[in-house]
Image (cartoon, rainbow, N blue to C red; front, side, top):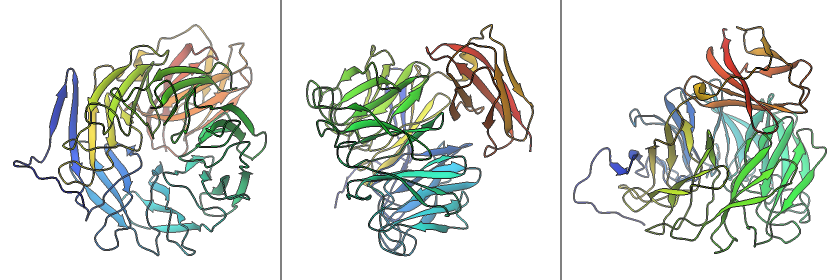
Length: 464
């Protein structure tokens, strides 16, 4: 068992690196959870997450919440064999409901999909996995239009992975795809959705068996293997891709010039792959998470590498320039982060898998002056954009005068959190924006062309 002895222990620890500030918000003790592998999800000023292990009795993991300032930590659920155990991935939130999945437990011992209120009440087992569709480690759900999507690392016809969907009430289970090795193998983490398409990566398989990037329609049709990794350009992606306009950004855990992993960009159609940065151990190595976008800057973490070989926080411009190592993790800060950074305003939030003062991982915040603080920086354009009715109860129609084959609609809440990211493919006709799952309030939108230019921005109001 890992133990860390300190002569003086502070409730909150601050580390300053130039203009950046790292704050230890919570140290896991084991009783409240330990060894978190996933990412945090934010609602208002409250963070929600899961731990892989720990808990008062079963050492099967926990669901927790904590305020963004580190106060009010609360264990919402301790997992057991009945509810499921070892929830390696991340939660998603819709209204007052949290959705997640566990890699074990449930009725058949292969895990389950569950929902729980944000206050910790009304836990519900929505679906029990079996040997053919059980999720992988670090797998997470994706929500769109009343459906949950996920990937199973060892499921599917050939037991090397598959893509699945189910309604949020636990009905209408559907297998969308079986991976067969050629089109990918052993997918980890989650999918992203844009314009009716799911995008994701597999850890292995493809032409060189080093992993692949793919797209597939949400109904299971039109699967495309859009890129194959080959060790030279990278290998072994464990995170998911991040989309902005017609570009995908992501990381792989190996390959590249120093076999330490690569940050890359690629068009959504598979063209113009570019290695933005090759890790070299001292500046980070083996990224297992995904990238977080703020303006034209990408933020991320690596599992290892850095000054103490236990990971770093970094930033890089979307064009591949300006790589900066912002923080070296160590035993005091926590070590070996698996998940992603969560952005809110000018703050990033994350977790480390192990160490910290309690030895079981930490929840932290990180502030850097490079983070853009809001959508208000988006410049207007002379395009005619009509969104109506406004205010509405959450369903908006949008019409554009721009002669473009594809526009991207991004919507942020007042804290700067992106809550909507969809392509508007028919630019000259009406399309719907569905924000019905979001609470009442003021939201900010921006419209982006296929070239990545912001052509319009404005406010939306939801009144329920």
